[in-house]
Length: 408
Image (cartoon, rainbow, N blue to C red; front, top):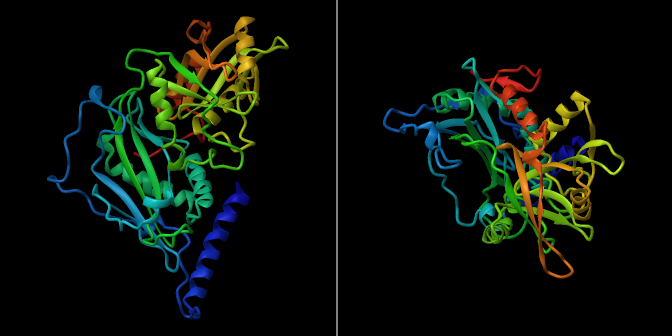
């Protein structure tokens, strides 16, 4: 991570040099240096008036991404002057030139995190430093500028505090937080952006499981891939998501809720929908084992929930924990030999999502076969233990040192 962030800073520094050289300018010794991050101390807050504030929807009607809080945060960057003063202000539309690089070359990235109102009425963020570090890595890969993790978390905390009444009074719902970073320079031509905008939206999100766990069906078709070695599948860029929408619709037409993304001749399992994937089984050596794909090839997004489940599993020390690729032939064999116990996705929105069925396309014949996964029948259920443990930490029922940050 350190090397990649250093590369990102070098990219920005190189951009500045190139820009000055092309304009034939020589930096003045008296000129103020470009600001290399934005700072919490410079934050300007403009509170919404009563007329700008909107009614809050009932918790039981909340749909993900449909409601937004009263305020947003934004800060701009320029290659010569660096970062401007960050500001929190009433939610408003952005003004972009139609030539902005985000609109033509997808110079865009985002994060997804949440604030939770605990059983003690305190509002907590869950491992926010992991989201910000991942965002910085993605920014470096996108030739966007770096920023300071802690300064950003402080500002986001103030945004959540200002809109704290939008954090649902519920121990199953939460406030979703969407930090976003875009290239705004109004020039056509593929190249690094000399102007950028960082902004943060928030909005209440309802309970993911309204009536208990609902196992999902997956379409597994190796004709389509989500990511490949050397690509950007391990970064949270918007360009990773648009190409998945059509395949998701194809899955729905076949009665599946998500896509199980496969890669390579061996049909390695990589991700499920927009989640990381886990398999809990008895391996061929007769050991209880939790397996999830590794991060080494750049095929897997390093999810915060993924890492949290691995950390918990290793701390429990009750079964083998392995990061390696699982193949479809291995899954099929484990089902035939009755060694498969559970398969589930993991992500911010749901914590865990049980897999009950895979519709697998045979790449040689084109025929489909139905694989039934006994996740919900597994007793005791590891997936449910993960879910309850994470929820207990997020809502303050259990203290996990260093995993939460109290906002208010």
